[in-house]
Length: 207
Image (tube, rainbow, N blue to C red):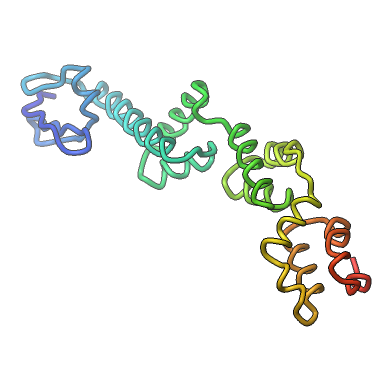
């Protein structure tokens, strides 16, 4: 196949046009490295290889762009790449390489996320649920939550003082706050222990 023109486009792409009328967009870096220019010749087999190489390079650049803005799990990053239109095999290989480089690490992500949840008074149960939604495998999410040195009652005291203290003075307030905290994933015993000092009404709450 004879290349009749190689014109650089936007987004680091180069358009190759062939003598038979066919054309293709490839990553400009790949074209430069392979010295693909007007007058050159390339086989269909080699072009297929370069098409995949181009897809890999473009997926890698996009993955690094995503990671520069926020840490992500393997699953979340893969979904982002595929949703953006990148080839699944190229996306998977990019993520595998980024894992080797330490740029993608589900355990690190989970540990950092669990720490933020602890500081934000998010229960361990809810923290695990949030991590699962972000693509963290269950075993890693559970281990990170369990190892986050969370003081559940201290979390509850801070949460009540910040968000629920006023509601406790309303009619049936203690019951409503009790139910809200249970829904957030805190244990029955911890919620009862913390709220009992606010109202004896909790003596009648059933576990």
